[in-house]
Image (cartoon, rainbow, N blue to C red; front, side, top):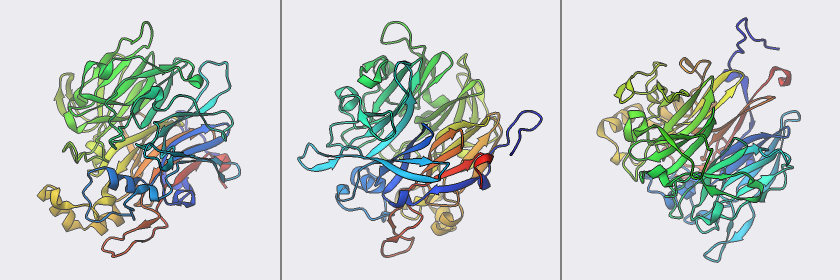
Length: 487
């Protein structure tokens, strides 16, 4: 068994430590995203979102010369019912424990109640009920709205609130977090089709989420109408931190969440930590060794075509308890808080222009792991007429197939101190269709990683003339087992 060195430091994980324990979307390439993940009662739970490309084609203004996968005119001609899968690392077996039920939509036709399952956490804050798994959902625009599902046994998932959390006209709940024994969340998504902007940027709290009881505990957008959505939240020390989506650059606010409601909130960071619109939203937050780490991004994978922002890669900052902050990965610049240089030496995106998000973070065995969403897989399909000429010329010179073969796939980096970073993989665990690493979970048995891979079940090969099966399409789960579990 691997031992810590003399300094008590466990060695970090490398590519060879991981093996793929689920591929091809659990046998169904329409399971595109391993969108949520949690460790609960000795098992790994994974919630999927299905058919991302067909929905994007139908709803969003994305310029493609040809769509990478077959997209019917009506996405609901496909099976869009979100699923939850459960994994036992001792037996190496998967079981589907949930499939979204069918309901009648507002247009009078059958639709899935959930298209996707966007967040998971285990909650037992009150201490008077057994721990339960909570799952935040993504509802079709013609559905009743998102729920928070709850399960005590990992097999029966029951809604705990009215649709739309409190009847709000939204489609999804992205983030749920526990802080001081209570649950906090915020709605996202609009019935117009945008899964990120809800025009209802308010923090909600419940001291008894099993029975609902959600109430607002912040002012709308913290008094700034530019805060279109509260995108991420995380407890750190005596404060709950929340990060916003703002076209002038994200903001970070914090509160002790004590006293009269709405609580008093303090702004810690504004205008994207001085970078402005290129740090459009906070995508990830995690406490690590006495500081809060915050990863940024631009919606749409790093290219917000609707608002003409990007493409631009993300940055990483860390915030200390006194409110001061460091730039770790990014562009050096002068800010109201002083001149900042990237302490890691890396430019935005770990020097990878195609990284659109710093998507997820997790601490495992004393190391911080940070994953990305990387969009170069789409280069061969995109309409390049809208790109800057110099950038298009570079892509044309290198070649889309060469980029796919030698560059594409998400990045995963690790650091022991937040300043020195080394890559675990730069090619999506050897699969260029793994665009993003959406979920990371540290468990007693090892580290789990869940990918975003919407390139299934059939794909149009670059330069091809028909769609063909893609055995490498659909989300994957990769697992770095502790020494005791390795064969």
